[in-house]
Amino acid sequence: MIPFARRMIFSLLLLASPLVHAAQSNNMTLGIEIIRAHFQGAGLVPYLLSNFTPTALLSATYTGGGIVTPGQLLPKSRTQTAPNLTITPTDMTTLLNKKYTLVMVDAWAPGHTDPRGQICHWIVNGVTIQDHSVLTHGSVVVEQYRGPTPPSGSRPHRYAILLYAQPFPAVPPPQGFPIQNNDPGFCHLADYVKASNIGPLIAGTYFTVEEGVATFTPSPTSPVVTSTLPASGSSGPSASTVGIVTQHNGAFSSSSNYLTILLAPFLWLLAL
Image (cartoon, rainbow, N blue to C red; front, side):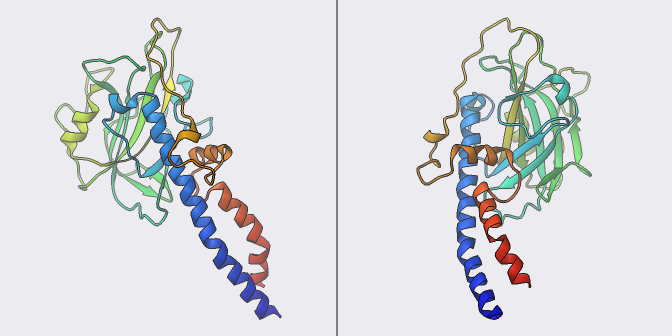
């Protein structure tokens, strides 16, 4: 009886495996579409990036709070130390064993530009990824992390955190880096990426910080309506799942978690 039960349980697990993979794949695809829509709606594309086609989801967590959702308004005091970053690729079989370049810039408030470019807040070459965590230990710090300090009355500034592939083990800083005696430190992100020969852009997220009362009206941004995204449909994840996709760093979606809970008793019997 026991061998037969084990064979039945093993068959159930084989049947459930494609369901888990499909649910995970659908949620990751939708998560990518959501972050792309956020970058478009916030005007980061095309102002900061000519295009944005990430292949992974990047999450930032500052001390004293949970995972930062795209565009979330954060108090300046909470962002003065570097965040913890985690990344989840769309294809969970992808090996993240390469080196990457981490960049954080102030892209100003929507509608505002500066001929001097953006403000560089963080540039690190040679970062690595271990267990989905982005590690800066042993990396080359081109620009030390500097917390956001938007001028009072300048509306919410958009702070983009970007992770680029780094084709070469070493990336010599372009002329003008590291920025010295220049506070704030201006740079043109596109020029830096080109001069450093880094890319493509793997993943990104952004948040906002505001100081004081606005003295001008910024350009409007577009809200993200998940039901209109290409990856969303009647057979796709629900709105509640979207929140998990954008905030959860684990490998499984909510649907796969349900399946795991459902199959737990069978797994226990199989172990007997």
